[in-house]
Image (tube, rainbow, N blue to C red; front, side, top):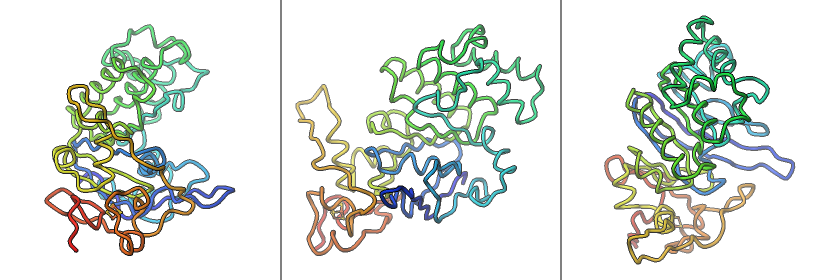
Length: 319
Ligand code: SF4
């Protein structure tokens, strides 16, 4: 097992109250596996991604749980041990590459610096930077460019080139294609596929479940800070157990069928005061009064590899 996340909870201490961004999230990832986390904005998928790197932005705080990476709890490591892992064994790319690129330094400087932190010599780093740019289909002269001289897609390619430098064991990709047009999006996904083919596990975050279907081994569905379903792509698409997963699938337009697109009614809840019981109950067509609004369903294995947190998984009411 490469990664085991156990009972992870992350809260944001804002001026208007404590936002429960993720609560008791648990899952595993194997080496070379691609797991996509889907859900609406605020579902907690990016919060968990940052917590896996122990990089929750202020005013967030990891309040409990463990992130076991190759047998070591990332959340308990000293900062020098964390530095050794980040950027080498675990790397991250973001929706906006400018988040990680320095606007005042050339691409070459930044790529070389990222390698030197982990002990690569100047000469070797320059050689590798050229090779990495070639791998992401960018000409060598881009080493002399500043980030603002590149398009959004090119900047994301640079981020991926930096992430590829040490063949990481885990890449966390936080909505890396959301700001890009469809053609560029596809080429970025192909690069991530290449990394997976070389053995990197991919933790992919998106709000677009159709993107998840094409590339992932498993899909994890988050709602209001909770992991509500996880299973193989086939299980999630052909037999969604949680009404929220089903609603996400029904909300995807299908050009080749007459199936109507159904928007999910209502809005994600305010996580300062999440609903009692099942957090999805105010929007759920199956909600049972006196049960769903009172008792929180646990994430349980319904079939092999397929877990859901619902009192009526698959829509079956055992009353
Ligand atoms: Fe709907 Fe109840 Fe299942 Fe929650 S537990 S998803 S409210 S049926």
